[in-house]
Amino acid sequence: MENSTLLKRRRSDFYTSISILILAIAMMLKSFTFPMKESYAGVENVWYVSPALLPLLVSGLMILLSLVLLKKAITDGGMQQAIEDFPALKAAMFSENFLRFIIIILYLSSYVYGLIPNGDFFLASMIFLFAFIVPFYLDSNNLFMTSFWPFALGSLAIGIFGHFNILSTTTIDFIMIGIMVYMIFFCWLNIKANGQQKAKWRISLLTSVITPLVLIPAFKFGLLVPLPTEGIVIKLMETIVH
Image (cartoon, rainbow, N blue to C red; front, side, top):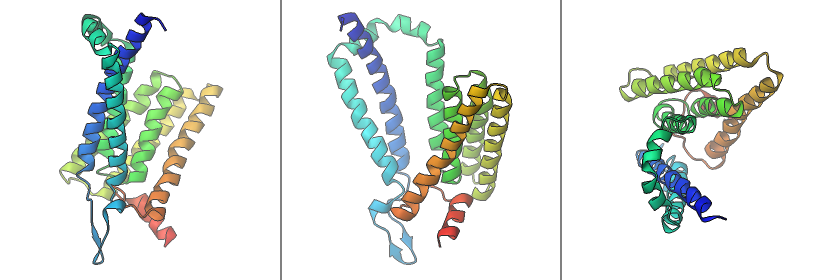
């Protein structure tokens, strides 16, 4: 590999590792706000069934991998290259790729700080997956308007409602259902004339529903891990199981 190509890759690795490290630290700090132990009917649960365990493991692994990537980038000259290319970086900040990067960060932040602490974990995960998958998988800038903005603004409102206890968890759950229905309907209107995009739309919808439908019961009823917020869907699952 040519030295210039290697430096460009290590420069990208430097930017990526810093971004992932910041996001992972924020995720870990948020995870520490979840209870490590709780008592149910006088019985105290041990730490390894805490709802904080999974996000702590994920964020810890992200921190470790980002530090490894950062060390590699610095060792191979990626940080020095990033410093030298800083004037060009300012111009790149207005590029489409940078905008997409910012949108990805906003997606993750909205999910972690807006939806998860305040609404049903199943609904939060389903909305996040659909809003995240559709515009990228269908590769349509128009779908950013019909999936990202309702998701981002809805998450912001839910975060405010939940933080100040303005609305109950059940009410927030119904708001999330409304957001999901809105995104499904208007995304369909945007692609209904395109057969290939309709197939991708169906796959996106199925993925966003099936993934939490499989993983959440596995953690809740298989591993007995309490979830961050258990709303109407997870309570319905409990009723069916018991």
